[in-house]
Amino acid sequence: MVYVTSVPRRFILESGRVVVLRTGDVEERVAKDTLFRLWVPDIEAVRRCLVEKHDFEIAVPAVPKGEVYSLRRVLGDVWELHVRLYGDGFVDAEVEVRREFFEHLGSRRLNVVYEAFEFYRDVYDRLHVYYVPMGEWIVRVEEHFQVELREPDMLTPWKPVVLGIVAAGLFTYALLRLTKGDRR
Figure 1 (cartoon, rainbow, N blue to C red):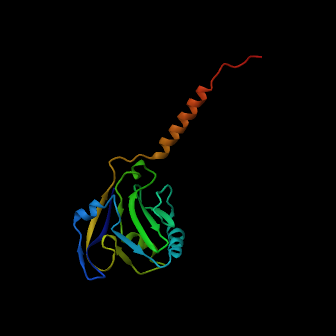
Figure 2: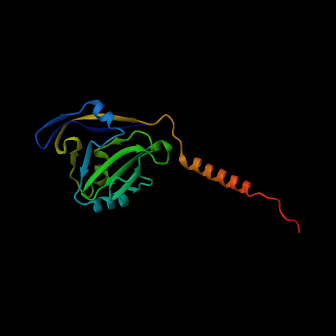
Figure 3: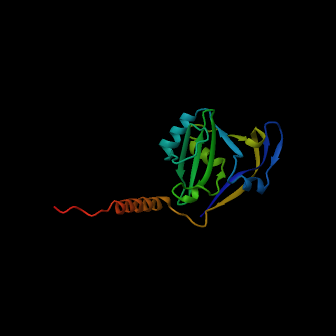
């Protein structure tokens, strides 16, 4: 399954500078740094909205990046939306392979702009987008890229593998403890 979204391609920053991204700018960052960040005035209201109205849950396990809240929402059989809410109001959002699969650890991630906003717009209906490489706010988007995130060739659920390893370990331990019993 392919995940398809749109990200700003040609946009104007608060300084008046016009930025035009190339395909490589977006693709190179699929698994790297954040290009775009959102901002909200009240992360507590956004967290409540995401959890109570839209079935987000705590993203476990997750590598902390200084966020106050790390939340996720399953988007289908393969993908999930991971939203990080920071104390200064910034919001980072990415679509990634669900953490139920080993491929979550090394697969491509896509920094997304509009997905998180669609879920929290009930409590804050303004979209503030910060362009990280130049450290400026976007004031107008003139054109978008359509970006496709392809699923990995193979998806390996980790829970059955871990349970199998634990069961094998317990079985091995039991066999190592095997001794001849005393007859009385």
